[in-house]
Length: 612
Image (tube, rainbow, N blue to C red; front, side, top):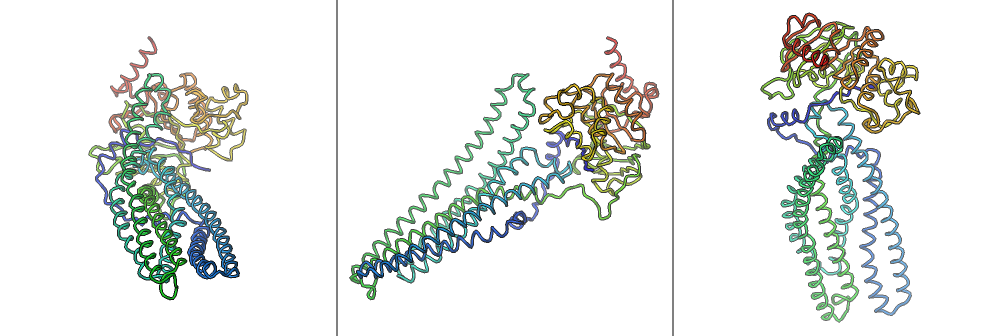
């Protein structure tokens, strides 16, 4: 049975507080390349074949100018048709084989780069699934989305360029220069003079551009956060007529991205003129020196340079300079993808703060819960703890109510039970065993949580309910729905339990969504059931029916009910009153009315409203 604990991580305000309170961490030493290459896996063969095919293709392209020079000097100048035919066939075969290997190189490069990106996205997503809420609080939703999409695509493009152009460019540059050197030593050194000019220029461009691209991707995170927040709250935006405000906020961030990209592209635009300058200067010098040698030798190979040799040298010049152009393109792409690589490795190398120990306990004996002087902080550097000195003992099968004002840390308290966060001080036991000693899947399978803002996923009602138990029968689904008071409205749909639920459950009401989430939790048959204000959208009668069903159908399950309405908890075995992260009172409904002023004020204010 899979775990379906779906409690929300810290709020945006808490995350911001967490980030501001944390001291800057020393940067971890991460070998980016070795970390990323782990995602190649089954595509290693294609990643090796692609550059091998490129190597064959490149060498054949370099051989072709030499064959062409022989055809000109021995065939055309020598007026020998057999020689022309012989070298012509060699040229045709070389071009055909080069074309074939070029096609194979493109195919293998496409397969390996696409497969690499697929595995990389899977590894990122899988890593995020293993994070505790503490880890998730370090990354915003928008940031994770950017890393899974834009950053992964940048690395895919960079990887494809590296295994194709990255192999082709140096081979062509080196081998073409060797062939040029064989033809004429002095002219071949012209190429070497262009290399340091290009190298220095590209290094300067990289130093100037890299910080801009790093800033751009962080701005992308902000943009995705705005889009995600706007789409999730689109009904609120429209009800308050805030479309123009949201549009202005989006446009402001989009403008920042535009300005940064324009600035980066302006700098990188010097790349092409620099390349062209080196290329044209080299061509002019080769033509000038070569023509002088041809005139001096009378086009005699024995005495110096020939027309065929000059043609080959010009072709090799073009190949060398084009390979340098390829290297500059790769260089540009690597600059862009370097920031993406670092951001992806941040996620891949992040270690979850909640992990299993070496010999985890795989059985939860019962639903007893013991908080022994528990203190909890979202950050070790926080001055004020979220929860302080929590001493609470719950017996199996008890129903515990929790009330308190907004910000009293009621949700933080129950999120410690399934180890969504770890306690900072003290100990927390479930079934008499410290929660740190449990296997995480085992523990979370025995703790079901239902929130006020629970999420339904796109799919049928049956598919959503089976998140609680993938192997549940239709009869078990119906029974759980009846206990949650959901069976009635489900059967009113034309397709019943096969009704399709839109993403987020937008085609059902808030009360229906909560009841479906309760039914989903009940299907887990947990030792502990936590309802975090999860009946706020249902009427008091339905709320009472749900609690009666719990009492009759799951008497041995420990039930913790967080509620704003006193009526939802007043028949609990014990009620806890919380304020500012502390338990200020505990007792039955009648006891608290006598001894706790805060509880009595809440009760009286609600009963007065009901009476009015």
